[in-house]
Image 1 (cartoon, rainbow over the protein chains, first blue to last red):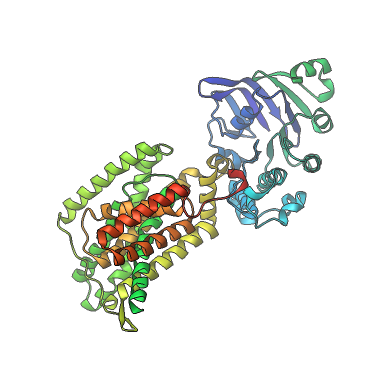
Image 2 (cartoon, chains in turn orange, cyan):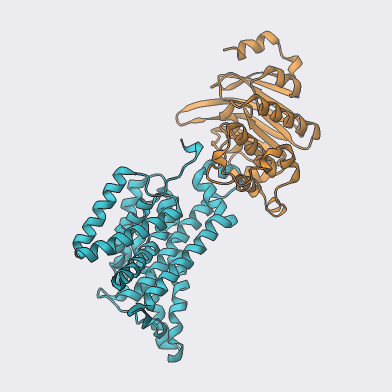
Length: 232
Length: 300
């Protein structure tokens, strides 16, 4: 469904991601692993269109997205939960969720789907509070629900459990497992926890120095190789 | 006692005019952070639209209809300034986002071009707009007379304010607008067309400047350099109120109007103005964010 070929991307003069090819099939959970600063976030940003690709191609289903604006990618069915959450601090929780519907004409008419809210029941009790007044974990849940509101075919999750309290980490992991079981949304996930990746990933790409150094189902990956690329 | 009431009314009236000229700027400068020095000229365009409407009504419609021209002039002024703002954004401003010094210079140039254009079309001397009959006279209240024109402007600013509030805080378009102004990249990733939002936002701010110009035609003659008298006050109100908050702009206009009127009452016109500006400078030294500052966890 998502097919990235020989992608190259970066900031200004510096190339951060080079020659990355990867594949996400419908309903799959694909994990990106790697140390901090190897280009995982840059890769997701480039797939979403927040950064322009320098080379290579990004295809999503039948659509060629390499030169498309982020809005067109959202409309094609890609949802994005960025690192740092990026909720709108001055807007209420409800307004933040409504903005998740901007991706498509039908979704704007339909309203916030019940399924997105069920996954994070706490949000419903905070509708009128400003997004910026929420705790980090609550903001993460809001960003996740906002992405789900558009009922995307592919979710890009950039370290959704980074820097938040353990109870919410567990809740977010449950939601990811839930989405996987449901099978209608594929997930491209950046995640650091080996146990969690082991439990949920259909396929793993290990990234080092901006490129894919190992790939395969979790069991196929050589453990010592994995530790060499992940250990700090 | 009645002197105080009259002064109170006068300060309200001055505040309403200040607010009207600053509301458009509260959007283009307050929300979008574009230093638009041509804002005064958009006001001027609105004023000349009222003048043109007046002439059209006088020339082509029966005399009994003349009184209605002003009711038509307000939406017309909004539309004309809106379109000029749209063209200005598409042709110039959009290349200058995030470059305040460049946009300051460029829009100042645009302002001068627009002034010269007005001079070419309408001539250099001021022109008068004859207010419609129903706005002449005033309301007698305890021995003093409150002119209808001033009351009308106060009413107009309240209506404009409510319309802006509904648009920005209650409509889907306003929600998109606030989202883009707060986090442009994330808004784009959610599928919002930031280009369209920028263009619409700037055009609406310009349109409101046009409405202000239309109102100014009630209280004095209008000329090509009309805007230059008001641009400093407009920026002052927005900065004093706190950039980015509608409520702050209202508070800024009220504060400036009240202090201006009473200082002028106690001293004289020029010393009063000096005192007001001195107070503003002192206040901004103390509270640089203005009267109403944004407070939230994420901005700390």
